[in-house]
Length: 175
Image (cartoon, rainbow, N blue to C red; front, side, top):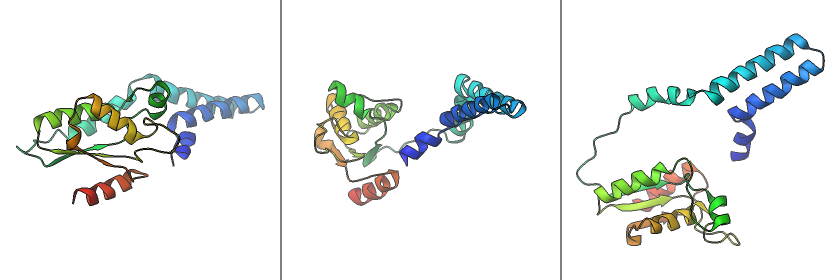
């Protein structure tokens, strides 16, 4: 799935449009080449250079405001996806990517609710030959330990292969 998204993601489709447009121009199909190249160039400017994503996300963020939290919560679930596994394994230090705010939010909630259990749901804790930082769960374990979080509060769900399994396996784990 990830490989398919890598090939068919928006930025790759824009690049493909530019390449097709240039190919049409070189093949002598000037009008079609100009249309395709112009459309791809415009898409590149709108989606790649302007803050369009922020404008598109803003109505959703306003539509779903932060909920009022109860006075006590039993648990906090931290979903994998912020971990930079390759960089962590290469440099020997756990690293987070653009979704690292998940960890900040989890830490804020863990501080606010000190009795709450924390469940990290991700992939395998370790894979043969990949070292302790070779998986999302390995990076998460190192990150959470480095944040000073009491390890007895944290449970790792490490059997999932995708987000659907994260939900199913985490529900079974906490039930």
